[in-house]
Amino acid sequence: MKASLNSKQFKGRTCAGKNRATFPLGPGAGKTFKTVEPAPPIQTTLEFQRMAWHPADFGQRYNIRFVFKPVVPAMVKKPIFE
Image 1 (tube, rainbow, N blue to C red):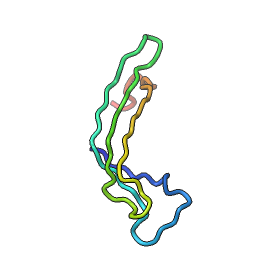
Image 2: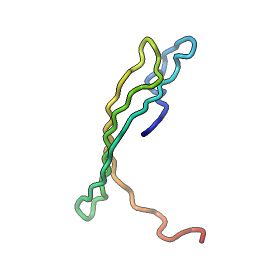
Image 3: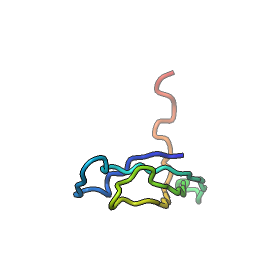
Image 4: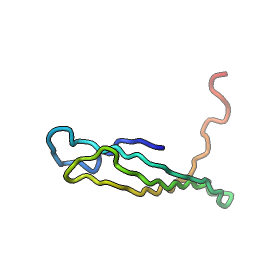
């Protein structure tokens, strides 16, 4: 499960009362794929989100999110504090 606050979609809009934020909740699944040697691995995630709390008039109700990102190797090889 994942919960996050998404306020970018309301930029420039005003509303009265409690209708100011959207809280998406939903399941997601992901996998990391190895690619050819010089390129970094790729992490993909697919999530289905239902807006548990959303503005009554203009907020979205459902969302499908696909994330595709390269995995950056660690910059620090040995522990800083032991």
